Length: 447
Image (cartoon, rainbow, N blue to C red):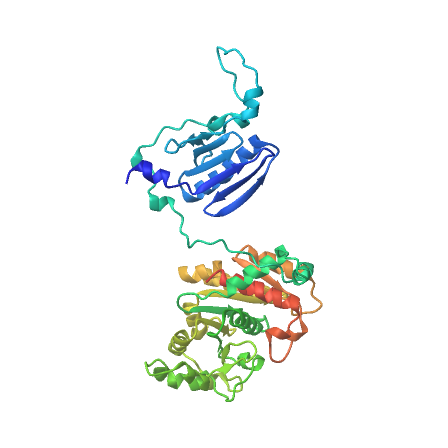
């Protein structure tokens, strides 16, 4: 097929300019409206719009333009250079018959005067006479054609605030920036990643908020992203994850799961078999693998190879694994958890000792090895206002200090529903839920 035929079979873009300075630009079926002061100003805006699209595609665009002077085929380049498209015929607008008859004849001038720009034909558009490219450099028909399957995503109307009220009353309103931000966070935590992901929640001090962070992050990801989320209590010293979550119809812990690892990893095992060992959270839709806080540490000693075995089972049956860690960073069990982690979450309160312990932990990981250093640099910090007397300024002070050494830091306000007992995401105040959603989205961005 000749180059002329290919170019004639296109363009994919059209532009129509009106006398009043309005214009419509259509590129691949997407129409952009222009409202300018006059035709010349509209022409400049049309060139800018098409050039921006040409830059995205990495090639010039053939554009069929219609203005008060006629119809002009042009080529608009990413740098806003405009050249005539000589593969198509221009169609200047013929003068009105009545005006032609009424106009008196005038003597021929030695040099014709320049016509007004709005009536000057293709020259009004051309900004530079770019050298003609050889035919081999012109795009092919397939390169020029935009797929019919491409569709612009239509934004859903507002659902919250006064905009949401107006939408429900029949007046379609676009969402506010706050609602758009919330939708973006929901989208982030709703993703499913290829292969399992392991998130370790850490801080060397007890009471820093590791267990609430494990529970509520698991709840957010499970609520929005669906099943396949496990919260695992990887703690030698009386881990309390089981105390802050619902208990299933049994009392099994990781001690009962360990002897069954080979069977659970076999090809004959089924996901429902895990119900014997994990505790499903009926409201927040994730599972919990408990430790046994009533037993002494020496009675439930877990070795690094046990961590490997449990993680192998968890990775087979779950897409996201949140690990509630202990406080002893020297424990081989703790260090093996770090070896399996894809993302770190540092939990801290506004207390100085909690904040300092988390920072020291990150410094130690940075010196451990290259992989641990990457985890530290990419960590997300969750600062909770565990003390109702603490102020927002106290939280921002801690968060600001962590933002200098980690990827993101999110603050969580005080909420009585987080203080004691079983934790449920739905029991939190709406403002607290929104903050936990933001914290989960920060984690998702690191996966």
